[in-house]
Image (tube, rainbow, N blue to C red; front, side, top):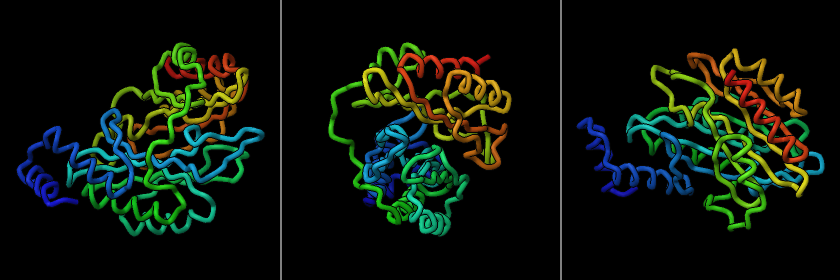
Length: 291
């Protein structure tokens, strides 16, 4: 961390002024150097991605792309000395204990430990975390936790791959635009209406309770999907019903947060079938949440 960045952040915090756009960029770049990952602007926060390209993950006869279900990440929002960090770490069984110890030592609260998939090989654990404080302290704590894993870093972008998923069909059927690379398309709507608070502050919606929907084109006539829908209590039953009715398996139902108001539930899924059928089922699930 350079002296200029430190002075800029300290003055901004001390005087109560928000950092300029260039100051914010320098802040997130500095955190990225600690995390060895490029900052990516998201809706209301800055995201750092650490895809587990070191893991060859199989579910049945599908080799799961890192962008589908192997996306470790951390998100930062707020000011230099009043930041909030959240994220999700994808861990192999032998990494879990050491990462939990490191997160605790760094002052990061573990808010969930669970599965997102069912029947994957190797079996994975997903650890969600939350922390508040200095951007640099939070980034350093996350960095130390990542060092307890085989997560590849620097976490640069993968080599460009020709687009092999029909994004016009995906985005058109689901009614949501996203991004795509190679065989994978990613969307992240926010389905919870209104504000959610926790720990005395209003949470950044996309950071705390976005709904990642990831799709992988396996063959011309086959698509798989994974992700989770973050919904309020009343949305859980109609969502699971819509998924099940369309041949999509709800693989987990649980929390990612602690102490949030109102309570948010996360329904993970695995879809596998003809692209039109998979997209129709996911669109039905989205519609069910909005009814």
